[in-house]
Image 1: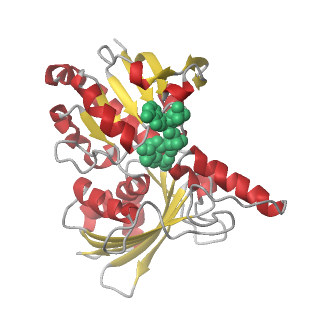
Image 2: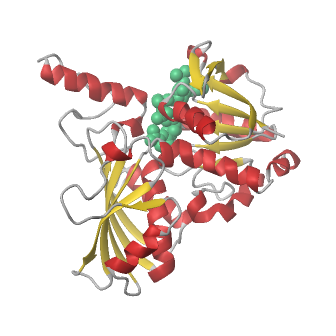
Length: 344
Ligand SMILES: NC(=O)c1ccc[n+]([C@@H]2O[C@H](COP(=O)([O-])OP(=O)(O)OC[C@H]3O[C@@H](n4cnc5c(N)ncnc54)[C@H](OP(=O)(O)O)[C@@H]3O)[C@@H](O)[C@H]2O)c1
């Protein structure tokens, strides 16, 4: 038997990618429904070789839908996810609205798939922030091998992480710079074309941004609350693909050769690490790919048991849509969906 799947936010960056990934991976769906705001009613989106007409979320009945892949932002999720869950449909949410709720599992299947069973309390499962998803895929096997004490991470995050309007802003600002036109700033607080901005999401009282805080809280929730992590999140003028510079201190020794071997056999990870010109991954090459790529693995000799590496992934895929579809696959493979109806 196939499932009925709704994609909310189907006209957005992540929603379109979700439709592509459901089709690519031949997800066992009898029916896929595309939903967005009433502004997009009747708009067409592609799903494999089919065209779907977008329906409005606020008039849609979820009572016979099994899975809702939600990617319509935090406000829409806060309003709709609990109501959808109460109808017996499992919501896999991409926003930050429920990530820190103790009754909502936060899942990266390569890291903590077993925790998915906790979804029955609210029928909601959270997807992590895009920069955390790729990070924990790399940290997990290394943590198992040598126990991570502390992580220092600096991110280089593409504009697609801020939605389709942000991609348009990079494009139009770049064109304006070349044609001596007016550089209009709406989505970002400073010009993003030919620039980098050390500010993603809102500022918090301690001087960190919410994006940086999310990386700390989500790594602790999914991997180990004892891991100390500090982050600097930076937006860069790249359309798709987030990169991260990662520095780790372990409890036990782990050589770069051992780390490379462990990462080479880790699920979801591909190591591209030749110590020569071009022997590493960049966001441009990772766009459209599923893996989390690790390059530049080397010892940090300034601390005991220190390691550095470079980590790149497609933020719309592993950072959002792919991870959500992988969670749906866990629900299907472990035959957990009937539990959602019982829980409702
Ligand atoms: N981009 C990433 O790398 C990434 C990674 C992880 C998580 N996320 C999260 O995923 C969500 C979507 O991100 P995105 O990049 O796809 O944004 P986006 O490109 O701006 O798309 C937003 C989508 O949400 C829909 N939407 C907005 N308000 C709605 C409402 N009230 N009711 C129904 N639909 C509504 C929009 O529909 P209309 O076209 O009709 O307005 C559109 O389809 C956000 O929560 C974001 O934080 C994104």
